[in-house]
Length: 204
Image (tube, rainbow, N blue to C red; front, side, top):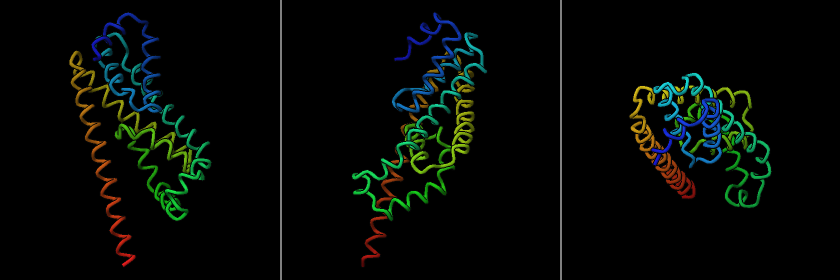
């Protein structure tokens, strides 16, 4: 499906290529179905062929990732109060439950941000919730930067090592993302079951 990429990037100016990688990394945080990580790995392939420079790919993808994450944080921060006070949220969560979630995110939210790049498919949710619960912008920006630096470094180095076989990493990445989403889904289900039986015991 991505076979057109090598030919496409061969025909464009390197500066434009860096711009495309930046935009791809940015948009992937706003619209998760966009394959930002795959394009990042392809950028590493372009490094191995000499088309692009390592630092250009690394910085453009990392900057795009961080700014995309922070943009969603700002949206959550600005719209958080209105959304949390909306009728459908109030129906689903009473004040006590909402307060519990807020306290949990205040306690563990920064750790979630620190590993957000490794949680593909949930990055937009993490950034939005960081804004909803008004986590400190400095730590949000710093931790998302560190997370992106580490994740993109792994992807780019792996793609660079594989060179023309870069699609192998894209395939591994796809399978990894599936596993992450399954683990998160199972974790949520188990947590809900635990809360259900805990609530029943209190009633009894």
